[in-house]
Length: 282
Image 1 (cartoon, rainbow, N blue to C red):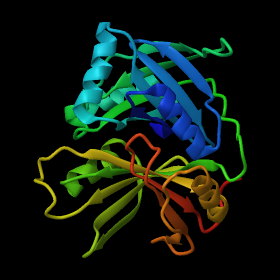
Image 2: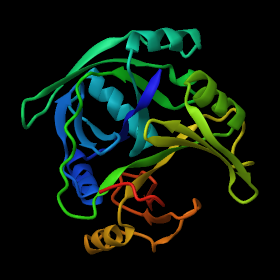
Image 3: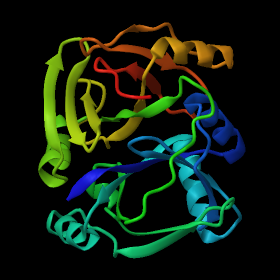
């Protein structure tokens, strides 16, 4: 059903500042700009997925919905959008699994700079059925243009997106049995709780649980993103020179990896950079 993570949406109150911040972080130019349906959007497409920045525009009903979501959650990760090869079949499956999908709609987007268009078909599951995480599903035949690298030591791809849960068993059932993602790791540790990794195309949905942090009926939350780099030393030097607040480089939990934390310039999204042990990237 799901072939990958098509994109994640990050809400922001200032699309210009957010776009500039992510261009600095990624060292890549925006691949798509669009205004419509009450929002300004800027997309950065990396090697395996897209980050969509969204800010409210205007005063119509659609803009008010975006503005309300921003007021409720603040800047940060707002939703996941999974890619599928057959949206009709996916819709039927979501319905059978009581995820209460909305009717499939056709959407078209026009790039403000080039005038090029992209079209896709989309549905959305009910948020109360997906444990509080907004989830969309889309089918598209056209590939988005990839964000052009502007300087060396750029971000190459997403490594994983993090979801926190108060009920790991129900979360495992949602992402594994119901959405059909392959669980590749299920590990518990007394210091940092339980980690579950679900393979989603060329990246991972990481579900985390820390005992005693919340009631079991509390909603799941999108927590952060880890991005891949090919040379973490070069990326660290580039970001530090650009005035981005970054941590020192340290050894990652996975053997052979090195990681660092980005402390600002991410629109409130907790952000980690990793140099994989096998060297995926540029």
